Length: 479
Image 1 (cartoon, one colour):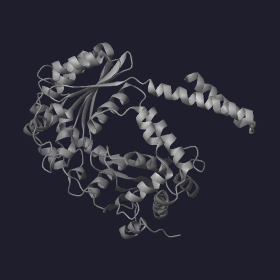
Image 2: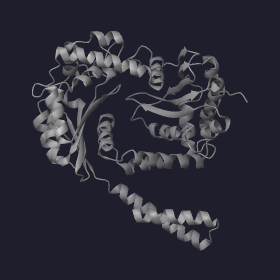
Image 3: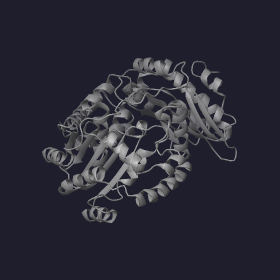
Image 4: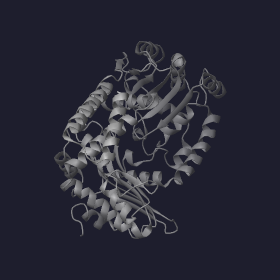
């Protein structure tokens, strides 16, 4: 495949220099492209199979063996800040911090030394719907890595001294997050879009909760949510599925299979806004979004293509006026912002589709106008050529994101929780290929046209149109 791609790349380069291609050369180029496409398709089809097994207690084991000398293995748990209430918001993230502070079998020092001596890496993160613990190690150390993961989620001591120490760490982390304006704006966006619901709360939780969370809160969260049916043991790299399955039975076979409190908290979207004006800040940070759909909804793929059509841009890019994104062309030509990025954030039953931008105070109004104009254009007049480019870019980005055992392992774990299966790349590619310009216009009209958006803005935002004007821009635009 690599040789075919190199030949194709060389052919395209020479053709571009010549500028003219005869009929016979066109036929030959078509043959080369077809062969390259076949080679690429064959490579995708040759991706190792994702094997899945379910234990008696409901825990799922999923792996992809690519024969590497290293591997990534982790636990993907269907439990995040969405499963918290107002009183214990922040517990999932606090618990993630406590996982590496010692177990009944290992002190914190023992754990750190063991990981370091293995040449391994241990990490964790918490999102609104998932908590993840994972390790990167040599393939030969897979059994030890799984045993350590089992130890930290089942035997953490959650000592009072360690809890107090981590309380201070998390409070400092919250201060650091407050300096990251993109995270601040996205937290505000969730707070206004999902007002007074679980998705509207932050992952870290409010300061008063962090100061009051105790050992009983952490233990209760584990006993409520860390159950077999809500956990996926995923692995990628040099892993044997049979070995991983045996390890899962040995280390996780005793996890409970029945659990209470599993109902997904309902979260309704509200078109609304949060504005925090501070004219002393140099730049305005603004996010605007409409309600989209959850992971498994049929409209997810078209919205991903629409998201790719809008694209992203910042001043460090070498070009703008020549990019395929119309908004990037307008932004670069008019010097409308420092950067923008479109996003399509999915949850189980809802999502946010929108755009985040960083602007000079005097360009905020124009930038908002052109963003909404592009959104309406997706609903009314996007072309087949634009959609074809976006589909190719989306497929390329998806493949590039699966470079290495860790992103592949993350993809396996997330998809198992979201879809209860790993979607094969050929199937995903086929679903993207089915999308046409008409599909984009229909789907964008359904979710964008005449909808009430959620808006979050921080900084010198005096020129940001009021909410009624932004709302009117979702179906009418000034010329």
